[in-house]
Length: 114
Length: 116
Image 1 (cartoon, each protein chain N blue to C red):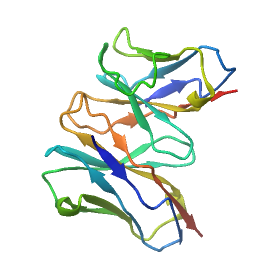
Image 2: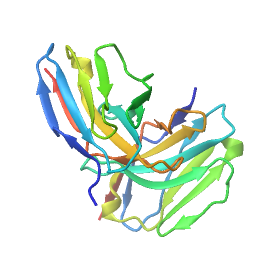
Image 3: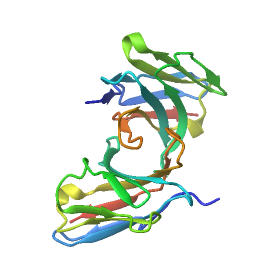
């Protein structure tokens, strides 16, 4: 079956531009997570959805970051007025309803802000 | 707050050698879960193993084994008879029972290079 997919795989933005990153989780997965991975570091949690409800957004670094999952499946992470420090790989993961099942990760979107 | 530390940044071995990756964690929860993930050059994180805080039994799964010791807050991972395909970055991660969903806190990763 299909895994988690993300698009685009690579995105180059000029500083100040808005970007939108898409995540298609595994069909039927209730939980969806976004992580940010800076070069040479481990992923860091950004936000969590259970179905369409955003239950935890404590990791979003600023109010320029916004995530949504309106129909409980596809999710979009939007970054407004991008800054150079936003350059990173953005990873999406999904997991099933069962508690503490492993998270399945997508290939990530590599964002470079010039 | 929870924290995961992987002191080894890079390990280089020759094929067929064993590799042990260290992981030390901090948490105030009594119920938590520990994970190891592999990130090959393609970039996609691959789940390897999960352990809960109530089960300190160490196991072997194929060429992978792990050593979980609550007394020292360590969750070490060993690859036996390493292969070139094992070359990747390995991440240890922690999930607390009280966290919304099961968000993961990752360590900084250990890059493993297996030379033929």
